[in-house]
Length: 94
Image (cartoon, rainbow, N blue to C red; front, top):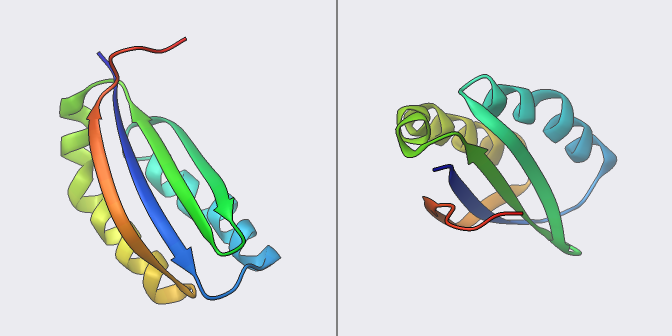
């Protein structure tokens, strides 16, 4: 059964540089930890969510310490902060 994490973020500004950094730096870092898929979804003018899917809970749990470091680095380098984070088993998909 696959496993997903969802983090919700707010930012002070939205720039092309932030999007490029997400695409070129942060998604590859997360993928290198065993993620099967990472989606960054703009949910408002200054907010977005990150949905990361792993093959199973063990892979996700193993990655979480490094993911926490990546999140902290992103919040330090970019004008944004994480509002919340959730995780769980994917029980239905299409």
